[in-house]
Length: 155
Image 1 (tube, rainbow, N blue to C red):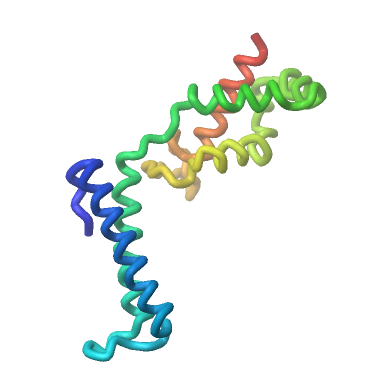
Image 2 (tube, helix red, strand yellow):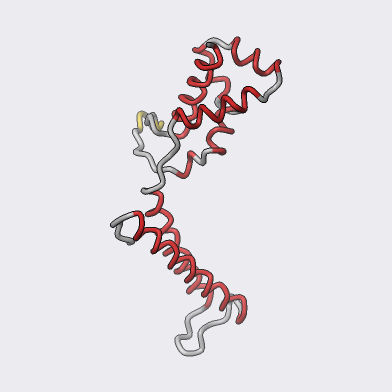
């Protein structure tokens, strides 16, 4: 497990792990993924998978230092999307009742979740009857962005 001392040491570890993956992948490409090291008899595919797992740990560690954009920051950008959309879409959105904004979950909400990589940021699950109702769940965050955009464009 990678110790989480600071953002700088986490970046150093990420750089190191990336270079090790590149090194082992280059060896696998040169000598064959199914081939093995002549001295250790270890398969190149096994060595590569080990380095990829180390890299995944470094990626998970660096995520702790990569803050999710705020609702305000995301809403600022989504308002720009709104202003560049068709008049028809603008009217439909502004005429939607606040309580009905959930209809945008699968369209605008998905665009927000994808554009801002909301699934990549860690959050603490809060399960109720098997459903994650955490305020930091990507679905909840994207819904808050939609609501904030609605409030702004209604003014």
